[in-house]
Length: 305
Length: 305
Image 1 (cartoon, chains in turn blue, orange):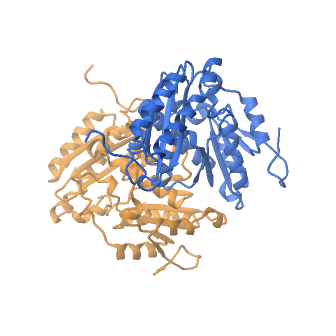
Image 2 (image 1 turned 120 degrees about the vertical axis):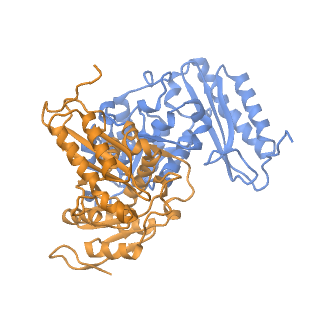
Image 3 (image 1 turned 60 degrees about the horizontal axis):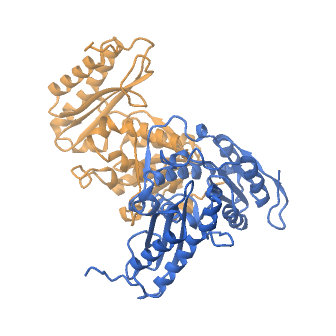
């Protein structure tokens, strides 16, 4: 397996590592000689969104490390851990050709041997969006991410903005606990028809796949509503109605919040997120638009008063 | 301020650092050139117990870093955060003469600026001993320790065995989350009369100070009971009675558990801890004995059966 790195660098063989001990040895800071490490954590079944993370990492670092681990800790009991799509060989080929140097692909036993039950719980940021709908999800995300950060010890870590709440919580975690990696936000990659790339898209039926781009179109129209000074509640209502009428999916949530703190928006909010989750038969999809707001343009009048 | 390092090494000036950013720069892994860092976290008001930690760190590492930070997050609302003894100048002198290279002494604002409310909660190990009596205490310990580990990035970190539950929880944290420091256990240092060294000993009245060595004597007698094959409940009862009759302190707990997992002891427990906390008027003291047990010697028959 040969990775074609960025122009000018020599081709390197992709290293596939399965144990924490080997990763530790391979990435020992004392042997790095100042080489920087960019880290792309994934759950595999790679798509162009992941490869975009690799591209960003490739441009800014000497070494690119990707982890592939479907993390059971972040799935609820009725969620799709068992059926989450997996394809190791395809992933390794894609990683190699995207320029990844090292893939860390541990087993569940390797990541979670006997444990003492110490948990990391997100703060208020978990009480909205997916956090409100997937209890324990972000506990599991923080658990695996602290482990992975400690195993890889990256200089920079790359996260896609599709998982905006995850990004926001991980940024807070890094800030609050002085974690030794910089978090880099990478824009959402979309299909030509606007559907956000997701490993779960393969679980859509033919009909659902045709309907799904309506999600992004609805969010775009919602963003326009906000730009026009319409009230967020009105925008939310419109987005919900549009998704309901144009897809067979069931709306899990549509919310408009300040970003990255995920609080109710206020007049002075500088950045806001319009985010939604839609449940199709076998796949729950999320998408969002993050937009800067012009001073004073935000309509946050309370309709009840 | 000049530190007299271990024999043969040149005298170095103690560096006193107050900000996270300066610590980061000073201890950047890329500039360490393979030099190892030993870390001694303290709440200051140093005594021979702390200096013993420094001595261990000094022997095993190129650089010794001590933090001095009375961590508000680990004190309950009715505990002694405000009156915890502090003496910065004395601490810096002691640190220097013990051979510390760098003291990190941040303000509370430096350590805890605006935060998102992410919390780290210990598992079952918190439900006994001090954890049962000081709700939230070990959350605060894990919070500060993850921050300090990330700021200092030590190769080895030194903890005294007087705080046995703290040690046990931190060892689990390091294990479960793959933290990048080795934890070194350092034996309890005692006064000549057996009282465990503690910053809080200065808060004892003259009478209390004379009574306090009875705590360790009672624990020693408890250990002898176990060695003799007496039932742990009998040993606990004896320790309680002895402390009650020989001191004016109020018993907070006396417990015998397996170590380091802090579970009820079983026939096959290899190491056990006899631990107690005693409340005097202005100081709550803890102490313990950790002992290896001979195969089959442990009497764990259930008296109720």
